[in-house]
Each structure stands twice: as structure tokens, then as C-alpha cells.
Length: 491
Picture 1 (tube, rainbow, N blue to C red):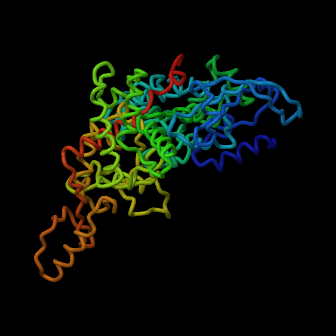
Picture 2: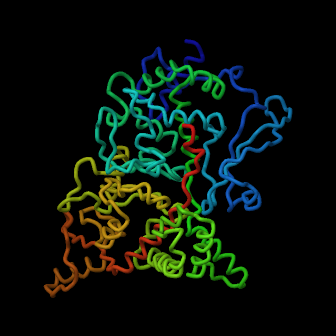
């Protein structure tokens, strides 16, 4: 066997997401580059993330999200330097750590353009009717505004389409975390018989054959990767595009900056935003006619400037609740407001029972590594850009943020595997002591008992109507700017 063929077949055996291929079609999965086909080094345009947190001076100089500049670069093969273009992505305010980019999938503008085309092209689906953007459209916050998504031949899926926004920061992809990178995630829908696959043949083989027959893709793949389209390179291109779908610069982000600036001027360490910080950035939003951020707070940019003190106070109260009584930050932490782990909230549970197909993270774990505590547990979603990506929860069961808050306020839905952070362990303990001693128990009654006889009592937050309103206002203040039009213009 030719050494190149042996390499290809060996590589196929170790790819974690590979479907078995016919021996005569290995190059549809992965191929080796012919460097002569690729564009010269001087014509390659790298893409670089620039964040305020890691390079404040350069970040401040960049005028927009996508910035075309030039750089002096050293060709590692020839040792010669040349001037070439570079795209610098100005990350939205609030995102201070740049996304991790795999070394084997360095970002280039041509690869990004290729990924963008594939993302919006239904060519990857068996019937030519479903694309990535069908369920993850910019118009609906890179989700689809449906409870659960509609795929090939009208098939209805069992999960709410998670947003692509800020997915570059996700530790795990999909609600059950079965993919650990955007490159792995991008391969899933094409081979899913509810989403894009009609069940005939090898899904990715057939998809790549369709791509290779398309004249518009032939040169694009050769110039970027040095060979025709493969599953490996299609996944890399789509992931490159998705990695740039970023959202930030929310009212909350601006208030954080205003608070830090104020604290430095006052020479104190009170860096948490105060109502006056929210007032300042809201006044600036009105002056700048920032329609998107103001409407997210239910403010009319033309008539509601007088409501600034009231709304500022509400956001601040909501923030204190978020990090206090409401306990939201038990799971929603960090710059994208997620702990990147999995929790059973009882979403979709009926009469204490987890329905088939709702096993969550437990089902995605391999045999020999099953963690029963994660039965029915799903990934904590990030909280930026919430308004366009509704409905909420992995089953799309909550239509509004108000409904989400009410769900948490009651402690979720009791079931045997309800997450510890959702349970009132003190009440459960008192109940068990009273039950064993015969003493009278006056606390909240158990909703269900585990197989071992332990009571499950959800933790009721006891939020007042006004507190619920303030909490929702704070989450609305996390909305951020609209996604930059370069991400969907000309698709």
C-alpha cells in the first residue's frame, strides 16, 4: 500500500467522530495538502483577536469589529519578510480573554469566508434544504426562535437550538456536552437523521461529494488547504466562522468600566457598579441613540430619558439579587455567565420522572465513565444576548425571562437527581431527623423521595414580584450590541 494511503487509513482509525468509510473513499474524510496549490504566504490573511483586557491600547485604536490592516510577516519556509494583510477582530467590551484557537486550525480570512459560505449553504444536508443557519440564524440570536427545531423533511428535534453566540468560549458544545470543540460540534448535524441526514449512505461522504461538485467551492478549498473539500476541512472552516460570532458591550459591561474609572478617580476599591454608574452609561446610551441596548430595557430612546434613575436602580438591585438572594451566580459566572458544567434543574420533568431522551450529560458519557449524579443534567447556558435567542431551557419550555425566574424561584422541578444547588438540604435533614424521632415537622414538605428514601425538597427562593422584575431587568442589561453585520451580510 502507498505510504500516503496508509497514513490516511491510520488517521481515520483515531478520529473520535468518524463514521466508518469505504476503503476506496478515505480522502473524503481527510487528505494531505499539496503546498503548490495553496496561496502564497504573502497572500494569506491571518485573523487575530484583540481584547480590551489583554491589549487595551491596541483595542482602543481599532475603530470597528473587523479591521483590515497590514503587517510585516516572516515566511517560515523561505525566511523572507513581506507586507501582507491581517484582519484584527476587536472583541466586544466585556470579553477580555480571547477565544482559544486550536493550533491545527489557525484562523485565516479565506478559511473564515469559506466557513461562512458553508454555514449558510444547505448543500451539506441530504435534501439541500437545511443549513446550519436554518436552526441558528442571526435573526433569532443565532438560534431559531422555536421551542425545538425543525430539520430535514420537517422532522422535529427534541432540543431547543442553543445559540452560536459566544460559543467560542464554551468548554463543551451541545446541551449534553458530547463535543468538546467547535470543530467537533460542526460535524454533528450533518450526520443527524433529524437535522440534516436522510439516512441514505454515509452522511459526510455524500455531503463532501456534493461540495466537490460545486464549482464555487473547488478553488476555495484548494487554495486554503491544498486539496479538495474533506470532512476535516469543512469542519475547520465552519468552526472558524462560528468562533467569531461574539456579543458583548452591554449596559452592564459599560457600567463595570464606569465603576472602575470612578473608583480610581476617588482612590478607593469600590469597583462594583452603583446606581450612579448605571445612570451615567444610560445617559450616554440615550445621547448615542443606542436603540438596541435601550429597547432591551424596554426604554423608548425618544421619550424615556426621564426613567434613567428608576431603571438604573432596578438594574443595580437585580445585580445584587443575581449574586445574592437569587443565587444565579452559583452556575452563571465569568464573562459569559456560565460555569461550563451540567446541572439537573428538573426541566421537563413530570411527576418527578425524567422522560426518555432527557438523560442529558449522563447519556453522553462513555461506558465506564458514567456519573449518575449527572442524570438529567444539561449544560449551563451563557446569558449574553438572551432576548433574541428565546425560548429558554434545553427543551424551550420557558417562553420569557419572567418564566425562567419563576421556574428558579420555585426551586425547579423535583426529581431524584435534582442538582444539589437546587435543593434545600437543611430542610431535608430536619425532615429526616423528625421522621426518625417522631417529632413534628413544620418545614416545606418533600416533593419526592429518592430510591433510598431520602426526601427531595427544592430550594424556594422566595423572591417578591419587585425582586423578580429587578432580576429580569439586570439580565436585560446583559443584552449587548447586535451581532456585527459582517457576520451575516452578503451570505
